[in-house]
Image 1 (cartoon, one colour):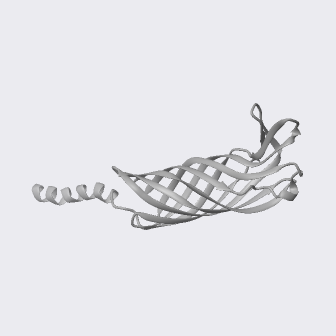
Image 2 (image 1 turned 90 degrees about the vertical axis):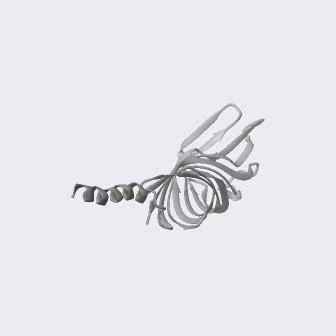
Image 3 (image 1 turned 45 degrees about the horizontal axis):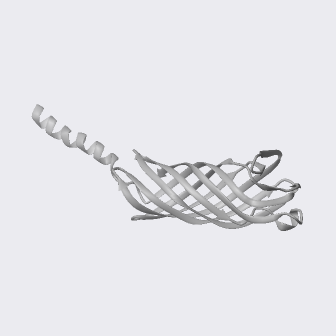
Length: 203
């Protein structure tokens, strides 16, 4: 009787850790948060004569929520995001945040990913996709832009969820309208660097 009980129990004990290693379903709900820094947007030499002053969004925490679908080594994700922050001006020697001017961003994004390699249970993935950003800036009006981002993600399974460490580079048009800036100001592309985490929950 004891032997029969142990023979019955052993497969169940073995199946428990194996079940935890089963791949999640193709659909997942994705929550992400990242520290985002910017460069570009606009510059001029009239604010401080003889010195180039760059004006762009201040660094901030950006959040997104979306859904993804896996197709073998590939996957596609759709997400909506929000990031609020101030306006920043900088020179070679000084950085100043204007806390009286809010510069908020609403985002719609498509992200395509491809598994590059497996690192035991973890995997390294390449990610690329377009973004549509709507910027609202106090006193400078609104602007909608189309840009893109590219980067890498290290994904680690943690039971029923997956943790993802992301590093992304973004490039897009300036969030400022030409008509809202002084005639001497120069419009340049907006560059962004984003480092953060994402939590994936299987559906």
